[in-house]
Structure formats: structure tokens, C-alpha cells
Length: 102
Image (cartoon, rainbow, N blue to C red; front, top):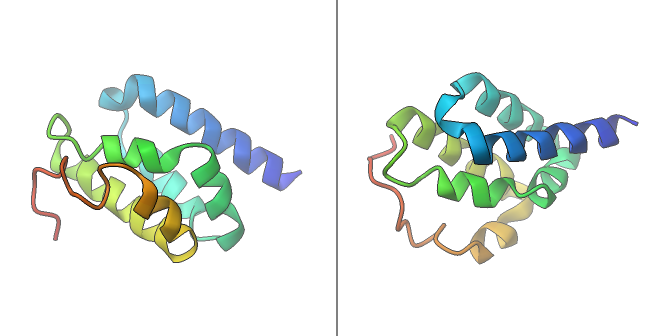
């Protein structure tokens, strides 16, 4: 039951982020990144399309705080889903990253 709720939350997050990301604050990113702390949630987050959204959030149209959250999310997912990250077009090339992430 909890895994279904996590999947629904992540899927809802991806849909909301795709349409309204400019109007969200870092709390939503922090929530998904917190879910990624649990190893079992990582694959569900990836299946919901979070990697693609994170890569899109690295585009120059978003500010540094969003870039930081996106990079943090990718790093959280990398321990279990690195192959998915490697396969995501534009992620490793860094074509979108416009600011220096410290």
C-alpha cells in the first residue's frame, strides 16, 4: 500500500513539475529528494519520469536554487539507477547546466 502511495505521489509530482515548475518552491524538490533516500523508492521515482524532469530543470531558464535541487535529486538516484541517468539524453553532456553548482 505504501509503495502505491509513493508511486502516486511521485507521478503527481512529475506531472505538476512539468506544467508548473516555475511556480513551485524548493519544498517539493526536497520532498521527492527525501523519498529518494529510501532505496526501494528510487526505481519508482525513475519510472515516474523524474530523471527527465530533473535534466530539463537544468536548463538556463531556471535559477540556481532549482539547479541545485535537480542535481541533488540526480545524485540521490545515482546510487541505484545510474544506468538510467547515463542513458538520459542531455544529462551527462551538461548541455543545460548554465550555473556552477557547488
